[in-house]
Amino acid sequence: MDVLLSEDERLLRDSVRSYLDAKIAPIVTEHERARTFPWHRLAELYEFGYVRGVVPEADGGDGASHMVLALLMQEAGRCWGSLRTTLNVQSMLARVLSTAGTPEQKERFLRPLLAGQRFGWFALTEPDAGSDAGALRTTARRDGDDYVINGRKLYITNALAGDFGVVLARVPDTGEVSAFLVDRAESEYQAYDIPHMPLRATTSCELVFDQTRIPAANLLGELGRGLALAMSGVNLGRLNMAMGAVGLSQACLEACVDFARTREQFGRPIAGFQLVQEMVVQVATLTETARLLGYQAARTLDAGLPGRYECSMAKYYCGEAVGQAATLALQVHGGAGLMEESPVERYFRDAREATIPEGTSQIQILHLGKHLLGVSALR
Ligand SMILES: Cc1cc2nc3c(=O)[nH]c(=O)nc-3n(C[C@H](O)[C@H](O)[C@H](O)COP(=O)(O)OP(=O)(O)OC[C@H]3O[C@@H](n4cnc5c(N)ncnc54)[C@H](O)[C@@H]3O)c2cc1C
Image (cartoon, rainbow, N blue to C red; front, side):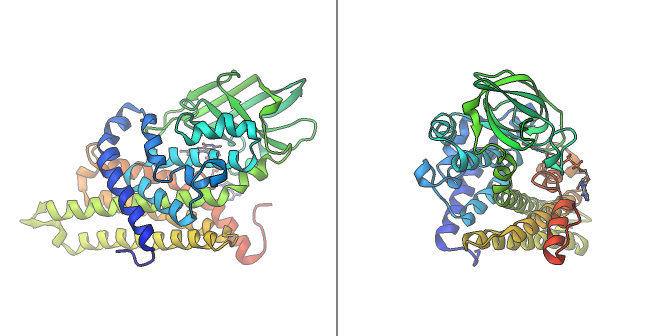
């Protein structure tokens, strides 16, 4: 029972959870080991409001509340980190296309994306522009009816699988950053997977643009407004990350309760030992406090308030909390927790991701510090 949710919200959460447990959880291990992803299963998940929920009905979406989006991400995070991060990227793309796309761009990219027929990536980070995203160096030079893109992007989720993407690049004439749609069917670029620790059913790619030509009609939004467009989705991205982390904490809790009840040492279940109980209670408390901050951020956005402070705090706390929860859950499992056949081995690896993308914990602290103290430590 979750008294902070309405009846409809509880029903949605429970039905998504049942569906993910029955249909997706059984295929997680095989995909994580093979480093593959069941792209063909996404469309059925969109029926619950994933991805479509971030888009207004006028653009073919469901126009869901932030609370509903938060619950959807929580359940995805509880089931499978690779699924949660993939849904997050598709949601961010849907959002920018709906916000800034022309009617033609919506027809070509947004409509098939919402139908689960096209999948994309979002490329902002570069080798020398991570937390300081505004320092990006990739260029998009106008040449007749085209833009010519040159530069490298790093850690781009699922750029190997996606057949289009949004790339942020600087237009040399103005020096301002703009967003461009790159379609693999019409433009040449290279994508290389970088082997990585968490989220093994996703790819984390380097993208190389070497004289990559794209039609000028692929400019997304206004010239020079690319960073503003990326930042317009910052609250949603942070809320998604925060609630995905809450779901993963919940999975850690369920795993260590099950294990502690069945594992016996010294002639009885380890659940009866006070030090084991302490670890399980710590995981539960981390999970519930994180959940409350996530709910608070979602309700703040639904109340029409800016929510930047609340989303930043939720992203910071939930990301740090899931790291502690996963460490404790692994400890409750003893040696079994380090074996790949145990779910907490994956939870532990995936939890480490939560403090990095969508603004590291340190960057969140600086945003929160500026809000509280009125002084920016960044610039
Ligand atoms: C799994 C994964 C998926 C990702 N997916 C995408 C994607 O799809 N698209 C995309 O564009 N990017 C993506 N990223 C990149 C991600 O957004 C960056 O990794 C993140 O912004 C941090 O940048 P960085 O890794 O270069 O670290 P850096 O910015 O180099 O930071 C290194 C360390 O320094 C700290 N630091 C930096 N500046 C300050 C400061 N001013 N004060 C205090 N501490 C500071 C950071 O907190 C961190 O601890 C992904 C990353 C990961 C790990």
